[in-house]
Length: 349
Image 1 (cartoon, rainbow, N blue to C red):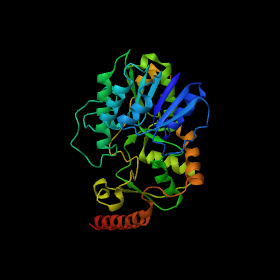
Image 2 (cartoon, helix red, strand yellow; image 1 turned 90 degrees about the horizontal axis):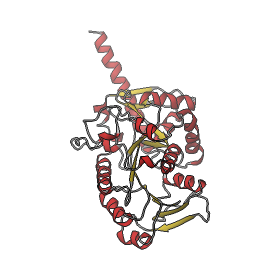
Image 3 (cartoon, rainbow, N blue to C red; image 1 turned 45 degrees about the vertical axis):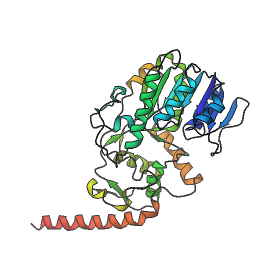
């Protein structure tokens, strides 16, 4: 098959490209050319460069070409999906869009386990601290709306995959490394809230495999699927499992969520800090994808060691927000002392 990946050098898409090449497909990557590809060179791989948001760049590179499948891994605004519709309508056998579980998590009216038909529940009041990203979820919903409106089984057959938190070596978000680095420094861990809300993440290779294998299932056309691990953790469970793999046992210090939110280091302009603090239960149904495809995920204890090794032995630098680690530790000490004083006041009547 002739396959185009829009955004083929990213965290997920580079692995997807390699899987497709290994399966014998001819793969074209359309990227900005700013990130060096980790994919082995082969005569079945073609690189095209341009700006995904530019109609001119897309048309110059692709408007005379047809593909058996197109994967759009980087559409983040409805205008970008609309460009894809205009460019590929009548020229593609499958159009597979990378969406996100955030399309659900921008609503208060979801019910767990969250099924794929809950993608159009009413929006909540804008919540800047939404751990799933308000703007991100809203724009991804809008991308999907454009694609579903354009969906046609002959001219523009659409499928949508909605991954949850994606983890593994080379993760640009470095969510797992946030906790790995703090566990390894041996100091207490500051945990927002109770740490009891359930969530799912997923190993990046499982995501890439799911995207690649979707081509095998024609019945997946016209449908959306959740992509998440079968394992469910709370933040406390996740941290205990991570500590076990690292053979470290730091103290867990929980702080009231409302107080935590007032701390200067509780947010960061460049991304997620204190990740997997979902603030509510976020469990996603996998019934549909297991019914329509052959679907399985790698256990945490099997994929996390390789992730730990990459971040501790290959990656150079710190996790997001680690420059304020001393502030975290100072607050932990103040919090513990305040709790002791309060406990003493209670016991003394």
